[in-house]
Length: 422
Image (cartoon, rainbow, N blue to C red; front, side, top):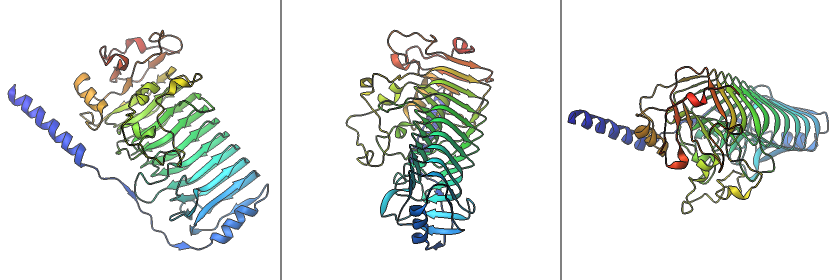
């Protein structure tokens, strides 16, 4: 017995040492040969009138300032292909975004790559009927906290389609949709980001047929406080979410900087989510987590150093005083989790975060497929109509009820109360 205990201690020590010293971060280093057409392309954006199509040629083009379109209708920006038309903002000196689109109706951008903006590569705000198709957003070199926050970043937008895109190297979210309505996110790839794909405070969102891998966290379905729009009614299906175990390189104090590495998907404080027919596998913290906002708010350390650039970079921070938002619902509910495939190649949970240690000691060293924090508002009951979580036809899985509100006192693997249909 003593030899077994010593062996286990030795194994744990090796795992800890590996977690500490294995800090290699991935790199994205495409070959580029820049051509100077900045003046001509900038002029095409400035002079564009309603119903214009801006045809961008094949080549690698370097810009010192943002390209912007404002208050136009029926505009199309079209390149020669995702690998043929490259717009690079490396060394940008004016503006934060690469391409900035505001207050437009019937806007399409397709078939090109946007790289290395000082802030967000592609930001679209307060627009309607928007198509983002076959766009690659990337930051080159080794992934870094200094990379821009958002790759593809539509916000306050309605009737939105994002398809056939790639997002690489964002220090917040690769593909992010915020405070938007009637959204389709399909057939995309997201890797080397802190969050691969994120739906935040958005409504009537369909997320399907995406490949989300090698991020810190794969898919985030979040509802956050102190915003003018709140979200719900999300469908996520037929996605492949795998191997999201990248070290978190988010900006300190941001909400995504609290996402543990090794997280497949998180449903946080969102109502009416249908998560079905996804493959979620090979995550060292959990395949799917269902949590309240309290889990994130509780992690805020008032003495911790917070990056002062958060506000300037338009990044969502942790709000410890979320309760001052009387309209905000901090708890998940009305969730259907069905027909998913959960797998894991890892034998031990990561020891790089407190959740991994918790599972090590409370979950018999197993990594959960579905972890539920179990936190409810005062006066609510588990599985009442507003906070119901239904699991069905997900095969054999490791389910964890954390009982986080009571210091994990009633931590349990009992799944039967959650086997139901909404």
